[in-house]
Amino acid sequence: MAQIKAIYNSKIVCPVCNSNIEYTKVRSKTIRLIKQDSDFCPYYEGENPLLYEAVICPECGYGAHVTTFSKINRYDKVKVSKNITSKWHKRSFVGERTIDQALEAFKIVLLNLNTMESLKSETAKICMRIAWLYRYKEDSENEKKFLEYALQNYKDAYSEEDLTEEGKLDEYTCLYIIGELYKRLELYEESTQWLSRLIMSYADPQQKPKISQRLIETTRDLYQEVKDIVAATKEEH
Ligand SMILES: [Zn+2]
Figure 1 (cartoon, protein in one colour):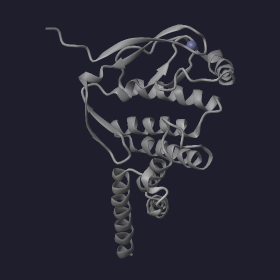
Figure 2: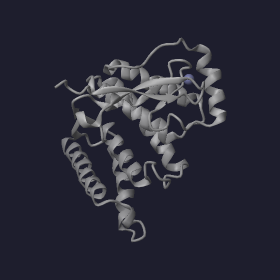
Figure 3: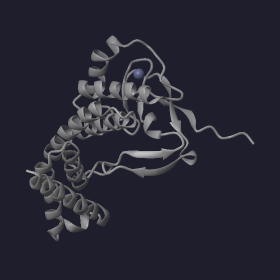
């Protein structure tokens, strides 16, 4: 029996130029999540679906995360036509992707987001993915750069956006990620400040039911880990 191909092409209409376009997806049956880093960076057995999450229109250069590709308002459509399409050279993005090709696609998405009045949480999500792709490549310098961008955007999202909307990152996970990113960037004081905000929220009976057991346990472990790092560095001096 022929082996099932891990990737296949699907059709979608580009909301900016109305072309019928194809994009590549990974069959979920062919993959298995092996593990995730503490900032949720995933590792798979089989093809990595993360490489295919950036969908680019070959005709006009509009690009977005696969989950938000069709959700663009008319003002942003005009901005994409004006700032992206005018400079775009038609090219295809379907088929198997290497990490470098995925990086290129995600960076086009980031260019699109920077053109629009995009949500900070969406920009943060894309920056995280770019950082993870650099992590797969063991390019720690670029990984750090994009973790910093992600952190800034998550902080802005936390203060500016309504994170109670369904389908969005919730405010407690956002607090955790900010604490985790500060730790990765070796800014331990800031890390404990943000993590303790989440731990204090859990102590509030009104907020407690909104925070999952798993998230609070992970947060407490991380908080202790960061405290230990700080204590160890103080001993050294
Ligand atoms: Zn298009």
